[in-house]
Image 1 (cartoon, helix red, strand yellow):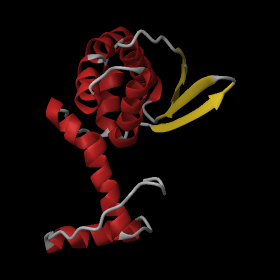
Image 2: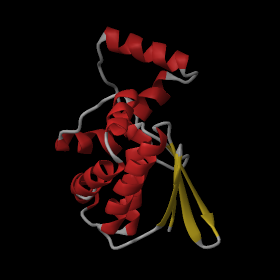
Image 3: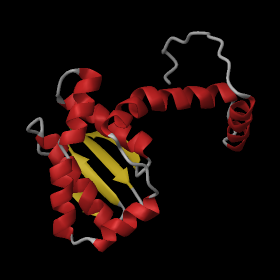
Length: 173
């Protein structure tokens, strides 16, 4: 949450076990329960409520990585391209009502931030936006991420320059 965002004060009742779990996690993260709860609510409002509608599965990175490594590069690319535009388009239209570069970028940021499969970095360099996604899914993870991003940006007829390595995908727009 940025410093300029307006906040509201509300009172909620939550179960004691839920509160104790929040306290433990907040202490482990060296933050307040209030900050942790706000992060949880933002994750739900920016991502969870949309991704739950499309029946997304939650799995570990290790399991997903094993699946990727069991498939050929061609099968990974085909699956990413086939699934790429469908779910993102539904989520973007549900959240924003329109497909544009800004709404696609919002989707990518939220997918990475709340999906937990990579770290997101974005910088302006020489008039271009450079997005770096760092991950620990290996080379085939980069194949999947690159292919799905090509498909997502393709929905708005944007074809960024992409480069990939074992643990990162770089997108230049």
